[in-house]
Image (tube, rainbow, N blue to C red; front, side):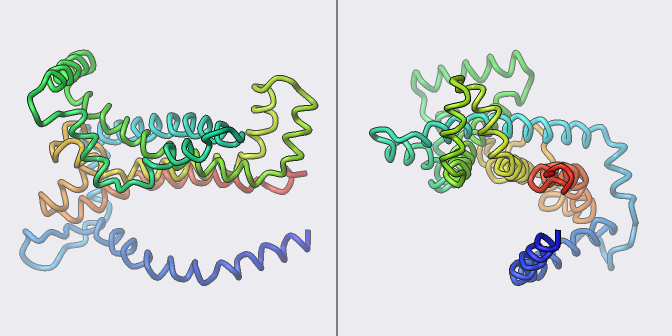
Length: 293
């Protein structure tokens, strides 16, 4: 117990410079956003901003459009996170075994993440919405019409952004989990092979528990990237936000509407949800002492 406490103190001491840097870089903008959310700050208003307290938050809680945007945002984050985690696990397990051409497969899997998003998103936009009249553009137009007719207006845009997020994020999670597999002593996997011949049983009873911290961090990174996915949503829809998400809604309020106070409040509305998810994932990453015993 004493040795573990010393290790924790040493870890915090080594992390102190990075923590100080993060606080310096993030403390002011986060503090400014929290303060702004409690005011009616707007460049369209004459005079200094007035303190309105929690009025901005209360207005959104009573707004059905906010709950629709929050639902879409949570569904988008959940769907993309589950899909990226499933594909990432498959990529990691595939690359964990040596085979001929493994380097080329690794490059093909990691390329979507390594390639600049600003370029790849344009390729996706032209693929899903061809700018040149061809037989392919007619086909994609029919697909878009069928999806929107079956699921409602904006469904095709939602599917497009979701597919791009999964395509780009699953490669990163796959390489991230591969690093976790390589960090596990190979003797543990060899013992698992001797204990059970079922690959599925070895995966659930050995691989998943050993990679639990990596799974937790991968899910958290996926969720945060999905909640902050403003640029990809904006570019893939050509600036026409036909399905509401919190990030784009806040952008319209701040940049287009000049309502900095409500926009700041809106961008902070899902912070409690993210903190709750972070707490659950942190407990998976570093469980209490009695659970280790």
